[in-house]
Length: 392
Image (spheres, rainbow, N blue to C red):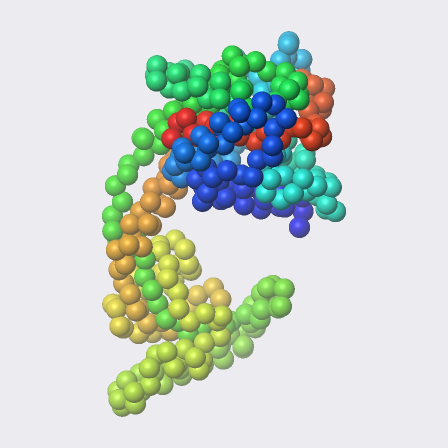
């Protein structure tokens, strides 16, 4: 597995855990600063769990949609980088990077960076922190263009979040970041504006989705393959002669099933699946757009209890039986997924069009000096969680 793929897998684990845990305490190490402040923070984390919906939205906003920003190597007076008229300091990137670093270490162990094969991981996490921060800066500009401003209540929450997070930092962490409480509040204001503009954009998407578009079907399937599959998963198509033989086999099976029904033999479709199916599974549940188009068309047109003719698909010939044509619960879940995909697509289109004309510059020398926090007294990982608590 490459370093990039390993990073992406680990990132998905962390994001999934944050959504599932919904703000549970993530085994924070003891702080060396005032223990009363640490106890206060732990109590608040337990008493004020943040919602899964907000965590998921932020995860999609900052890790999913929109093209990556590519910076030119230019001096940025007194700052680390500039996105259009918005600038960011090395202290801001340190906050993002160190918090992501500690999330990884809490989840995978403090020596994760030094495992064999993980050499590119620190750089990948830094790039992720940079991508998040630059996207927040770009979205702040987009918020201004769309006339979006924080409400008084939101501004008050950013102030509370900044104070809470600042108070949680020990001497080593304050020295490492070199950041003030006022600067932290500006970071939280930028973050809140990014979330607000994301909400504004996705609200433009039509949320009406029909039952037919969202419904899922469940089928039993007999597959007669038209490809050789190696243990590695690599598929090689049959020759024309082999494919013709496979088709005839499927036609013969369909005739056997038809004759069995006509003669009242009592052989169930389950038994035919067990006898002839060459796939790893005999039962499938899927929605539109998730399987081979020929299989989808046949399955959605087939009445419950009916058995299809032979269907040619990419991996072979199939005979299917529809066992469930409408699942209300699954349909509602599918509607949510469809809406989410539409929203992500629309956000990506709007965001990409906006950043297309922005100028990006970075002090690459200063960027190269951003490193992992090696001091064992630096353990902070709650910058993002603090936002989520105050904006639940």
